Amino acid sequence: MRIFAGIVLGLFLLAEVSASPVANVVKLKGKVVFAGRPLHEGAKILHDGTVETGARSYVKIETPFWGNSIVIGPNSQMEFRLENPKEKKKYSFLKGACRWVRTKKTEKKGAIHTSHVSLGIRGTDFVLIVNPVFGESEVAVLDGEVLMTNASQLDDKKIVKKGQWGGVGGRYGSTIGEILDLPNKVIDKFEKILRK
View 1 (cartoon, rainbow, N blue to C red):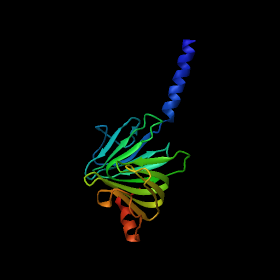
View 2 (cartoon, rainbow, N blue to C red):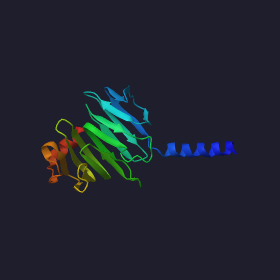
View 3 (cartoon, rainbow, N blue to C red):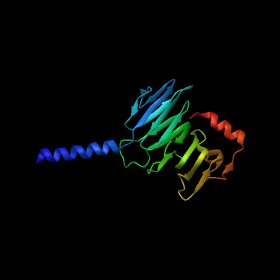
């Protein structure tokens, strides 16, 4: 009976682990570490920790479970919490710039968090910039839309659509201000910040 219970428990734990998302490092340049250890192309991120990129460095990470591709730019930090399938804040962007692309539709709802906002992802391609010195987060949506929610005032939320910009904190104010339509030349600059 104990052996049977052990097998059932083992299968349950295996199912829990396999249900957890895995982050695959598909492209990398320069100095990139995860939880203090160097990353390399082909590595898998299975545990909780923070990805940090050096100057003139970047990393492209894919999470097939969620259907996401994330390019983390130079001098940036992003925290991954993948161990607990019930964890709500799986992705927290701490500083720098990243480009998030939803590569396929899944039933799972994705979100990325900063200390200022959370962004609910809806079939999206966007650039997120976090400046901890000024205490602000901004997003430029290149395709799809995001639901931007103020982390300090959860009833302060706005939809940012394709070709639009939104920001909060620091120079942008304590509430989500006016969502701006971006001129094509500005969209082109955001497109070039981090290639998908």
